Image (spheres, rainbow, N blue to C red):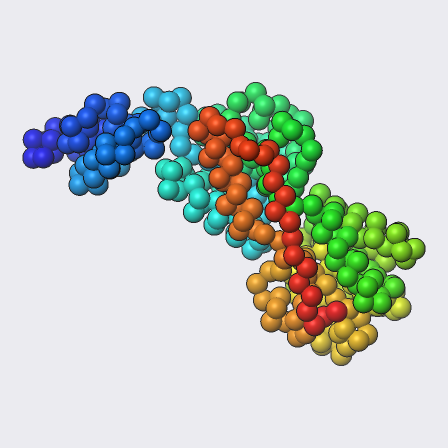
Length: 341
């Protein structure tokens, strides 16, 4: 071991050759063992890993990328980091990719397809191992960049029937329909839809809301309150007050996201508007604190961590050169009926 320790690069950094000599295998076998490739005997894998640990060997990502013409980096593009739902997804992705040696790079698009296109140009220039992208709202140029790159790609949060696209998520439309149906079944007839940000997933929930109310002959376009502002508790409170002033006969409000709904509940409490007696309130995503509101918020629980983990697993399969058993995985959602309805 001492002779191996002396035989290192001038920088003092242990090399793969050092690990191979210590494990008494070829450098190629050592490399394959550390990458977790199938076909390497378990006994050899264990021997190489022990040697790497004893020597304090850290793989050189630049050398690995040069040898394979692809890095171990996986860009994950999300709309915002201020929204906790994307933080939950990212945490699950990180925990799934890390054991296989992949590093997650976070890109924030701010719901702007042009900004996403710019990020994709930058990341794809470095030949990432794979891509995880939120939804399908992007420019045609971005689609062409992804297709031409040959980089494995999985889409999060939404589903498609396109058999050539890999995605993990749930039906935003069906979830919007389900929470609206819940309000109708509770006897509500003047049901408003209040939304912010107005990204494609929000508008899919809106379409579910419309379909449900049209089926029951209850749809009234005047009960839609759509704001392009970023979603927040403050905005939720303001929109509730505006809605009650302009549509005093409203008896239920479907907020497109829990932070809006939480702000609406707090505003109702300040204004002494009884919830759910005077007006029922529902949200979406079951964010932290929703079950602690007064009254507890009825909402849709979305499988955020499962989406992050499953999409990362699907991408790992693609990056190994294998084909996932399914290209589109619907993880569903859960209606959380609580005191606000």
